[in-house]
Image: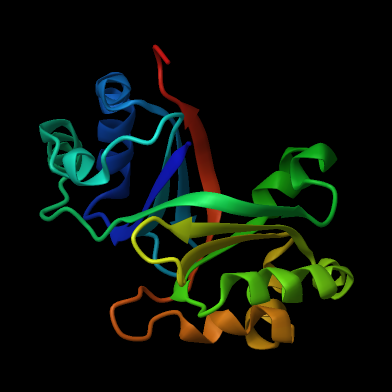
Length: 207
């Protein structure tokens, strides 16, 4: 079973962090990672959202204690290992044509909205999204991905790909009832809603 790690954090110097990340990619095959996806916040350019995909599911506690993981963050100037979401995908809704099929300009405009939140009953959330799929697509949401945390079945990470910044702003201000979970972002220990552009999806060399 595959695993996704995700983290929402700030970097002191984005350009330095990006150079360090790409330089350190050769270290990651030893952890079993095969790709990294990086997003950068629209409002705070020092804030990033990063997902790391693994083909096999390693022991998460051992992975997070790995010297390679610590070194990877240290080299980027991140003082402390940020909170990490560890989970598996349970649903991928493709609600419209991916923006990249319309060309680079459309892809650059695409916005990703990420939320790590508690949702109670996951099956109920999935059913609501299925029922509201047409309305969600009409609002500009092109993809709606749900990941379940390994250590808490009621905690999820939801990634929404939205066609334009304008539609993303409208969606966040006036979401469909099926996306009411966005109001839970930023409550308690959960990070605020992340809204940003894709920087790059990187394949880990040697995997």
